[in-house]
Length: 189
Image 1 (cartoon, one colour):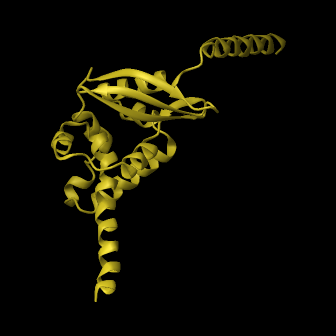
Image 2: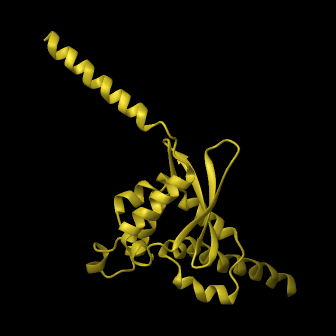
């Protein structure tokens, strides 16, 4: 039994040393973004989800549940949003430009280029891992001005992730336009 305990202590010690050695270099937002892009290029659904913040995965899964209500029943079980994201993605089309960390070091903004356009991706440090904050991306898209007509025509060429981030803005705009019309009508009479 004494020999077994010594062997166990040695194994635990080696595992601890290996774990400390692996943590020698702290991952950066760029590393997290690059891992997420690589997961999309391989269409590794588990790695794609692992590269997203937990609220992002929850929001995307909720969107899928809503979308599936409008699909024929035979297509509902086969629909996988993450695989759809992969389909519209061209390997090598994303190029890292820069990263900018906030003052507290828990969020960052990645600037990258895709198809000749510079875009931004918010990243969040979650459980020691830099993950893409798709909820933050959707919020940013919803608060931005709508694209000019020429840019709107280019939107289908974007990866489905870009289409997902622009969807809330398209839905929010009609509600904002209707509200003033209802308020102004009584004032004019």
